[in-house]
Length: 199
Image (cartoon, rainbow, N blue to C red; front, side, top):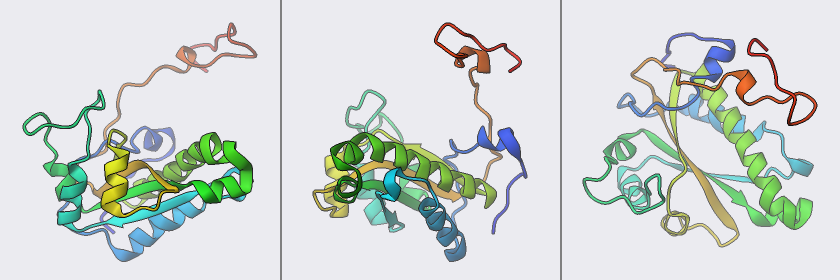
């Protein structure tokens, strides 16, 4: 395992994702297995476990996937507009998808829609927490053409890609980004109740 600066508690949570510079080595098989098992530990509605994971390491496949990336305004990334080589060079891209049929079978239409998205969020968080413990950095890619990614990966119609996790052993210390204070987003008892800055 390639380690990084040891951090614990809330400091670790603030550093879960945002790394785009990785060592030019594959993620070890044991570490990869740990990440995949972490997803399976996530809570899910009616225990439906709606996630499907596609592990991509081949550069040619990552290059094809990179053509489906979008910018922050969900427009196609044009040559020279945004550098995507980091995506291609990253050791591993993990596509996290929803199996709509599995989710619907357990919890109906809402299970396949709203509940499944919450479950996917929980699954990604579990993976990111384990990745941080293993010294594995991550970048979360949300902006991409889902139809194109589904086609490239050969996904069946009932499997919907939700997020791409770009993973590798980080070559830079995790960094903390500016965050809202607790009192800026917490409401006590009702919307009008505000938390103190120190809470």
